[in-house]
Amino acid sequence: MNHIDIVEAKEVYKNGENITQYLRNKFNETENTSEIIEIAYDLQAGSYISAVQNNLHKAQLYANELGSILNQHIESGDTLLDVGAGELTTLTFVLNTLDVELTNVLAFDISWSRLKKGNEFYLQNKKLNINVDTFVADIKEIPLHEKCVDVVTSSHALEPNGKNLSQLLNELFRVAKRKLVLFEPSYELNSNEGKKRMNSLGYIKGVEDEVTKLGGKVTDIIPITNAGNPLNPTACYVIEPPLSNSSIELDYPVFCVPGTNYKLNVSDYFLVSEDTGLLFPVLEEIPILRSKAAILATAKF
Image (cartoon, rainbow, N blue to C red; front, side, top):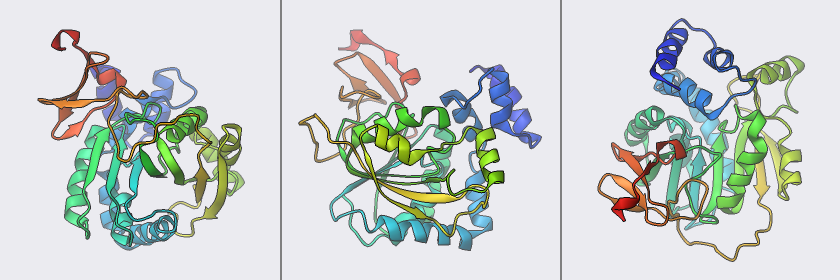
């Protein structure tokens, strides 16, 4: 990625063209990479909030349905992680429906701009006194210690990562202690027209099969009736992670170097790892915890 790519991509997006298809052609990729997803979603920052505001009733119906299901799988004192949280629109309305008191709520997205917009939306629309800690991250390398969150949830976050579904599920299994409650598109429930669309966009498919291959267990698949796009039907996948060989299980979330257990500590405007000598910047109170954002500064320690 460079500034020329971004300038060109902004023009393509402004003209209403399919930005992910353009970027796949630009970078000669057959599937969506992390960079393609980051550029595409960052350019759209604010658009999801606008869409919700233009159709608030529909957004709340969707979130209410998700919240009613999630309520059945969380317990008082749990920690909740929302992956690919985008502009926090769905998370905000879901949290407003919960009747269980959570200890920690964390949310990350690959786009800083979306989280910036999302934090503002959450503060304006939250009904409960729940603090949400947001950070920039890639689902392929979650910057949290293994087995440090009780429940992981998502809303169409795994969606564009068809090629990397197995890798993403493994990361979710690494950090989750008890359960995954994922609201993702269902290829199997889709029409032939919808399947063709999902194939062209590189969307995920075969979630249940992938979970089983990795040693996890899908305990329920629930079609969502208030999904927005009939060509992209949503299902709730309730998943138990594989049994872990690790004896480590933390009572609270701990930031780490992405994909590892090397703990990060706060220092000035950075999160730092004394073990690796890596620093990660914090921009407007949002930590940027992606490997490509790391600064090697071993002389600091």
